[in-house]
Image (cartoon, rainbow, N blue to C red; front, top):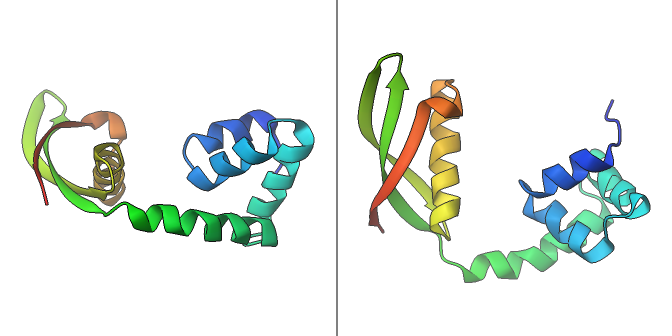
Length: 122
């Protein structure tokens, strides 16, 4: 069972654009944060649906690009260089996508992977 904590909701807003948008509009007081928390716990509520509808045109305006990054992977004392691909409207989004997907698929800690410079953008 999920337990409401105001600090966790604010921290979650840094990772989730939808929650960040809700907090920006509704405020950081406990009542507003509880309303946002409830929309997350109970799924696609009317409030969440209205924000998703509002966000969609913004997301569609920014074209998603494929970024190719130079990457270093730390294996104990050995460092392996490779190339990773990430998708996003911005370099930051693509970098996060590449980092998250690779670490998730390989089941390795994020700290072992260093995403370097952009090699190409398509």
